[in-house]
Length: 32
Image (cartoon, rainbow, N blue to C red; front, side, top):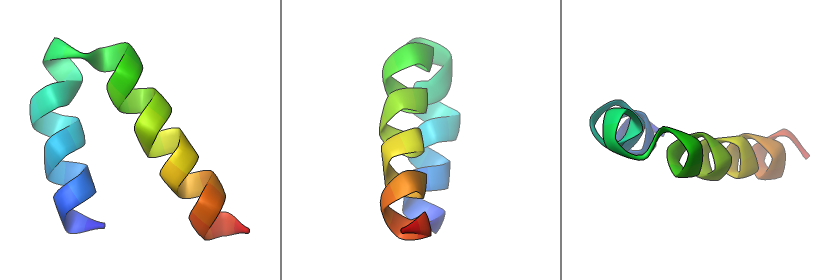
């Protein structure tokens, strides 16, 4: 989780859309 957060923070600025998509998928998978 921490690694994903860091990647989202760093890569989020460069690849905001892809970063959010990956994070969203991770959250959905973990939620279920």
